[in-house]
Image (tube, one colour):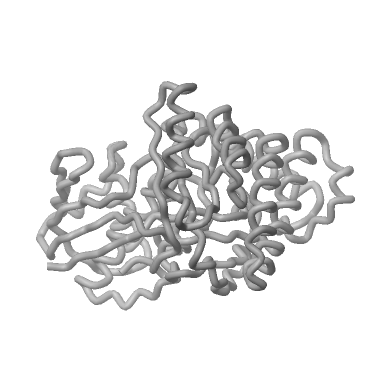
Length: 349
């Protein structure tokens, strides 16, 4: 029996920068997809979340628009890349919420890959796994995501954030203070809008880079934005400032200045809300409340349009902070919200 623990992820700073080859700073978190299984002829998997068993044989890798597409995507990409793998029989469980913007899909992909890597001795490195999972999500599942989620889940390190340049995949681990916690607040707002609006944002900023003749958003200076039409200038302007903020947060973490880190996170939220337009009333409500409760900082995390936000707070106040906001939130909104207190954790293992 092989047991895989694959974490979720939170992006501390660097939102919507990865598809323009900018900087990001995620952490793997201590909420997991658990996969327990063994080799088999076909693929037979029981999902505790969906309370159902699904199966397919390895010659049937056609999409069916269910959760098994993520499994099929991994088999498809391994086949594409010339690996020979057999089937698996197992159970998927865990405490990582689905649809909360904590990257449960990438977590699931990495769990499957990690299992097959172990079961069939594929000798894949962590980078191989991150790139294969991204390719499966882009080309099989059909989600045009960047590398952030898969990289964070493959490379997570306890008590550290990952500073990553998504253009060349150079990365470094940055110590995260042990006396603060990250409170993740899931708004309960399903991100229905996210995929179409995400694709539209991505198209616009990629077009903006083409107009400027640049490959990466890191090469763009703010004064060049005046050459762009609207909304190109506004969207890319946000990304240029966000790249700068990732560098500032990296340096502030290194010098142990959590007050500065928090300030930059909050500034990032209001910039993405106003100029990239991917926030919503619920996410803004959380950030305002976090400011009132004297969190170090708060912002939406993930694609936006619902999903989750994060706040950085002192460890001993984290649960009280979460409870307080949850009570206030429920007076105002009808959604099933939840909060989680998380910390930077090891990658898939």
